[in-house]
Length: 382
Image (cartoon, rainbow, N blue to C red; front, side, top):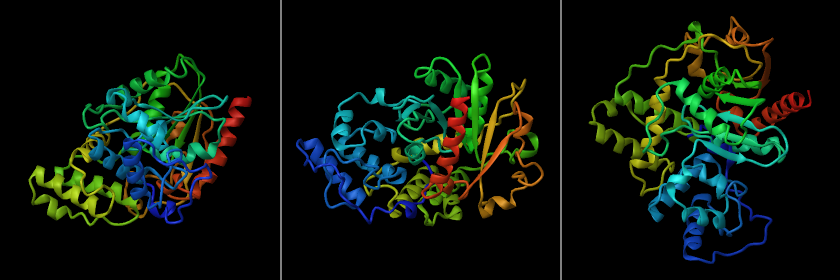
């Protein structure tokens, strides 16, 4: 799940795609069109209309896929929308085996002649919020996301960064068997991308891009996470709140009074009231995210035997208010936030508008993409 604010991408100004409208032709396409129109607030949706071009984004995608899961009896990963961004394509995907759909490697924008760019997402493990960045980088820049194992609610999430990095490398090498590699990580994902660079020392890692994250050094380590179930659910809800841009009104005190089953039901109802999930959603629609979130938060990572890596650090210009009070979130004493200890050379630091989350949203992501594109083009022309 990503944290993009709904207010940044309103679908109220819905306009029909420039493509010629083609009405649904099969029962599956008709049902999908009804679901899309409802989620997007659109008067009609043709089978060739693109979900993202019609104003869809990753938070709406959660609602969309939950509705599709209820109607078709098939749980699909959010990343399916990159395979089937039109109703015609998604209807075809629905007829495939679900097991084949769940892969960590997600081709967000696989076309182009440039060296592929591989991105690891934040603590929620979902890559859909990278869509806008991939779009802004252009059609000649292949862009892949690496999403967390466990989001399907069936697989067990990884419990350490080293194993997660090994898995992501295997997935990445199905597309690009040999280096030089271009790696990127946002937030928690930066730690995973860094560990990937360490394990790839026999291959060339041309560049490691860090999006707004501290290095894994002792001074930056947060207090170890030792929470009860109520605190886990409350904190996970806060992550969703930042994306929705409106409060979910989840009460930690209320959660503490409930048993585990009732806690999940309570969170589920708050998500429904906020229209994050449809009215007929069930607990399976949130369990994968919660499991991945908890597993990632609990990871304790400290690299050893460092192989220096070329790095660029992108910093968000705004600091989220609640982060300012975190003693471990040391932004002042070292402008590289600790990454200079692991860098092959000087760490390039680039400032971008927005905060830790909104830097990935419009219009801020346009600036991020412009600066990132310049870095990637410079690297590939070297």
